[in-house]
Length: 101
Image 1 (cartoon, rainbow, N blue to C red):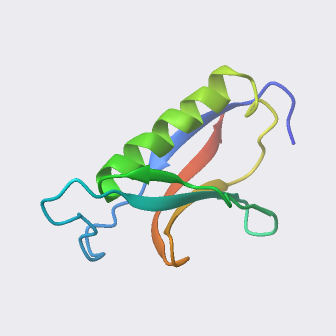
Image 2 (spheres, rainbow, N blue to C red; image 1 turned 90 degrees about the vertical axis):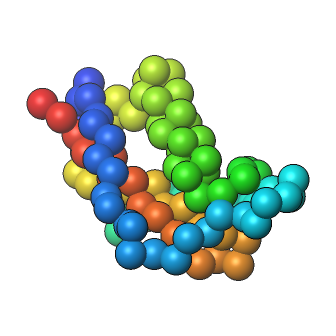
C-alpha cells in the first residue's frame, strides 16, 4: 500500500439490475457493505437499514468519504471495491475505490 495516496470513488452503472425499492410502506431493508480488493474481503456482518438500493448507495458513499476524511484510506493501493449486498448475501451494487495520483 502506498503511503499518502488519495482515493477516488468510481461508481459503476448497474441499471440492468432488478429494482430493489421497497413497495410504498415504512419498512426498511438491511444492506451489508463489504470492502474487497479481490483477495481480501472485510465483511460487514451488522449491515445497515435503508429504504431502497439508491439510499444504500448514498450511505455507502458517505461511509467512504468518512473513511477518507479520517485517513483510513490513505494507504489504499490498487483497486478496492465496496460491495453492497442484501440480507440474503446477494450482490446488488459495487462502488470502486481507486487510488488517485
